[in-house]
Length: 362
Ligand SMILES: Cc1ncc(COP(=O)(O)O)c(C=O)c1O
Image (cartoon, rainbow, N blue to C red; front, top):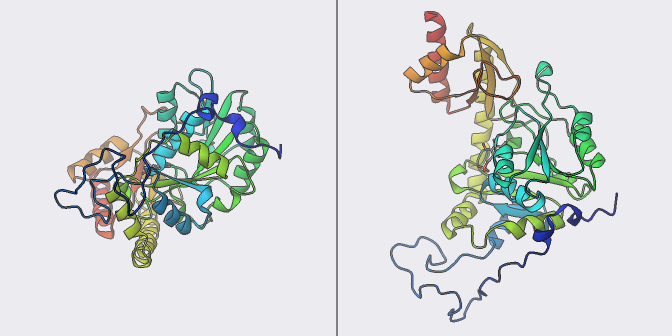
């Protein structure tokens, strides 16, 4: 299937979609073509006055993000968080009440959310909870039906913190070439020991890698992520994104955070989070209330407790929030489990103190 262009899988109405004709923006012109206000009012921090629309697509930001992820600009599209890239992929490729996508629970819930919004069937191919949430590539491929358009794989996976082997992801992508697009969500890859799959997108035409600035880059509030793929897929995602969607102050804030200085700071904080993760993980392992701690390649830890309700209650009394799964969640293998985000050393100490006190009192 080496002649796969990428367009075969796109919804026909998206292929035929007339792109929005944005007002031309040129420096040194009198701009009377976009119904903007002529002067900025109030305090405009931005280099470009907020009276003006931003670029129809955030081209300058995309160029900086392409540098950050070491890809060509044509391989990358910026989205408002990687969540928007998930939504855009589902809308661009999946026809309502006809197409389906595959997820591998327990995993990030937004894949299902956007599938439900679009009226797309979700085929679940669960990770093997009995063997530390491993993936069965054969099961993924055999569950891919005629109208399955997308396969979402999350590595490191939220909420298990485990990674999917690179070889398995490539194997699935090769076997599904021409049939489905494999989306690897690498929201937490910076915290992992292994490398991103970005370097495979040129060779694997049906592979999309999602990255975000919300985690290791500490920019969740800016809402900035990217989809990295071959230019045909990148162009397709761009088709369904709204024009002017990146606000000027967000573009400015992200560009500032991508300076060398700021990147060094993010790196230092990443190293600290990884060290804290390993410390918290070892400490949890020694607590009598903890039944199991999974090794994590992310900025959180999945743990199983003997009595999750009482643990949660004591944490709430200490004003500490964790994400519990309990026994009511449908995702397999998560009974009595909680996902604990790695905070600052001080916050992690507070968590461990509260858990130790709980263990002594129970
Ligand atoms: C696996 C995974 N992917 C994507 C996201 C979304 O990140 P954002 O939209 O902030 O880029 C998250 C957020 O928690 C996540 O856990």
